[in-house]
Image (cartoon, rainbow, N blue to C red; front, side, top):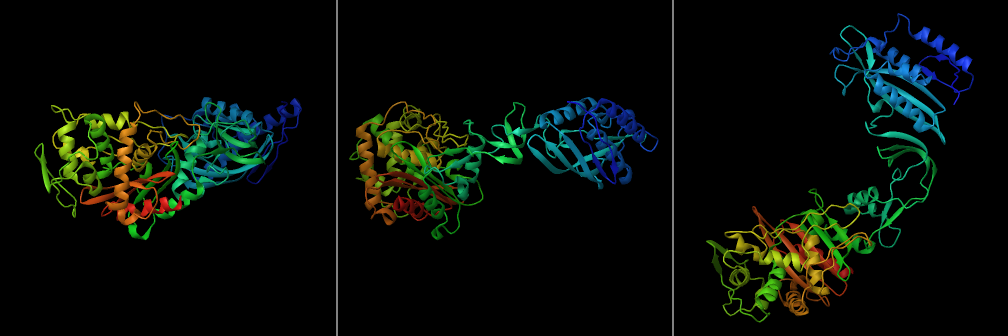
Length: 552
């Protein structure tokens, strides 16, 4: 590229035209060097970065110094412009990169004004200005600023970092112009219908942004403009669009209609504005159909790690059936209280003692002592209480799941090495046992499907497998027991009139309040809900789950 200039001074405006003609370039270069190198200005050639004054330069001197710096930059004298900074070598490389990356044809600076002491760089004066650059594809304008420091002997220098090129530009980032690189224009995460934008749902905005950010390029045109790129050349953000390309769509498993119902359900007036979270799955394939939450404590639907209370009795029952050979008719006495490893356990209010209770009957009324007695008797051997952990991992797929798109989820936990009272507490979902609504929705799905399908939000995402399938016998027993809970047990006040529904309620103590849980399924979906501070599962989470099962 021939680099000759047409030079002119008009107020605070500074401009350069690349016209051609080496002779003109040399003449103008000498003129500008003589003009700006007189006694009126001190350059940074004598600036000592180890002796920086704590006193900011005077406003007028800082502004004049920056005009000199910008004028030299505009003439494409990168080496000379770099000498006006506190790190000339770094600045020189960055200024050349700016011109090369943008395919710069012309750059001008205007409205160069002092803004007083810098709030970012200590002992510096902030100077603002406007930039207009003719780059590949069009003209790009933006406001910018630099910080001017002075050494103890009064020599001025521009404090250099990449934000001098563009505000907020990181040290390992660059600018490019022309065809926008992959990633510069975010992909758009959409529901399974192929067009509903996930970001229109309040609960999915963060999830949508994460999926969009992590979308793999599909080769479609992203248009032209100016963008920031990272050290690998991947687009970080488009700063200016000259021509629009086609937005990349990432189709998810979310059902737009069910998601809308979930958004409404977590705001149900019965919850009295308590934080709530819910997840709905297609139990046949593990597809996540809805994720919704309320409150300001984050997404408790997929990251709310809490004790799941009596919903854990689903896994406890499965362990008793698979590992101890019990059936729904096996004895599980329901007493007012029970001691285990020195800890006294009680039932929730309203649970009547029934010494002749069976496992199914204890499950229906959610009798804690029934499950602690049988669990502690059949599943703890010589102090080894890992049986519940093994069932959760091997049959129900508990572990670290990747649901797709870079969306983070918190892992449930049923520790294999619990001791003391926790050996008994785990069987009723207390102690050190934790879960999320996502996991509990999957537990219900595994029962209804008679197979574990790991939840995913992207249709093509890899799904972990369970180490062993749930037995047909155990799945059938659990389906019968969960149906009893929905029709005549603890979930009946909310779900008794819904067809083909199986459920399990849960109430878990946390500090001075309780959390309400409910997980359930019908012929199409499985759902779990958690309400923090809910008085009971049926009277809090029950309203959320009913809404989703009714809208399916």
